[in-house]
Image (tube, rainbow, N blue to C red):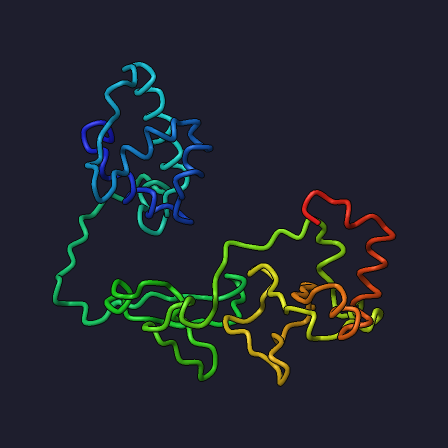
Length: 247
């Protein structure tokens, strides 16, 4: 079946419980990733069996794939796999019988999500990003892109993150002037909300604030305008921070 109709593989993977991702199938069936990808196809490539795979190897891999799919198939969809007294029954759906199809999107743990929203499937394809789950009264304007709000660079290499990136405690302990600090956002996995608000100082309202020590003044001006930041820099010189490959 799979050999003559490789394009049905994605559908079979979606009827498993839970749906089976490509890499998961590759691992469980000990199958070639190239074989699975070719059978799934893409917008530009028709699903097919790679011609370079030897017949014996192909049959072995397809057999293992079928075994895995049979094992994880959703028994609610295929009850005859659990009970051989039940015979497969064709399911016929009338296209006009469904007025609205919704997809349920969740944020957080799937079993106990922080936020759940049902969205009309017909409204999903036009969206450029799946960031449409609302949080409170937050409105999303798809006409605004990140570069309209920020100057985006590839990144900053400090040469010594432990010295130049400080948390709130280090800033207070060294009394470093705020004008010398650039607020940083943590990795997305540490953010608990989809929209990060700012306080009256323009700093992000997050639990663990971090700052980049960044001073554009010449040394003499820095020493005069920002004495505490200068003192911190002198401490770094004594510790050899300035001998790093980027400092």
